[in-house]
Image (cartoon, rainbow, N blue to C red):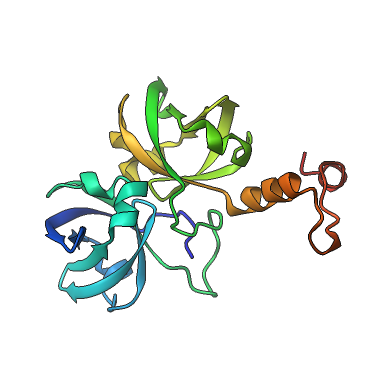
Length: 217
C-alpha cells in the first residue's frame, strides 16, 4: 500500500522484452529513500505497484506483465523516461496522502493545462465507466501522485497543482495529449459498490442518506 507522496523522481535505465512482458530497470537519485531497497519489496512506479526482482547501486529492476501493460502507461516507457517512485508505506509512517494500492484503474488523457500564477490546473478525461468513482474534493492518484479533485464533469475532472508538487514529481511535464495512470479512491469504490448492490450485504447500514448524516455528501 502507498500514500501517493512521491519520494523520488527516477528514470528508466533499460527496457527489455521478456515472455510477453517487460523487464524495466529504474534508476533512482535518492539513496536516503531507496538505498536499502531489497528484492521482493513493492515500489510504486508512476502509480503502478511493481515487485523488485533485482537491485544495484542506484537502480532496481521489475518485471511488468502483459496485464499491467494493457491497463497502464508502462508499455510506453523508453530509456530516459522520468518516473514517480514511492516505496510501500510502513505502519509507522505518516499517511500524508490517501490510501493508494498501486492498482491502476485506467489510462486518462490530459485535455488542457492552465497556468495560474505559480500553480497549474490540469484537466483530464477518462472512460465514462469510471464516473461513479470520482467526486469533487475527493482523492485520486495520477501517475502515483495523491491529488485532490477540484472539479468534475461527465468523464472528466480537473486538479490544481501546487508549486511543490510541480517541482518534486513528473506532473510538471504533463501537456495536452499526455497519457497517465489513474487510480480512483478505494473508499469511493466500496461506497459505489454498496449503492449498486442495494446495501443488502450483511445488513449494511450504508446508504446515501446515511452518508449525508455522517457529513460525507
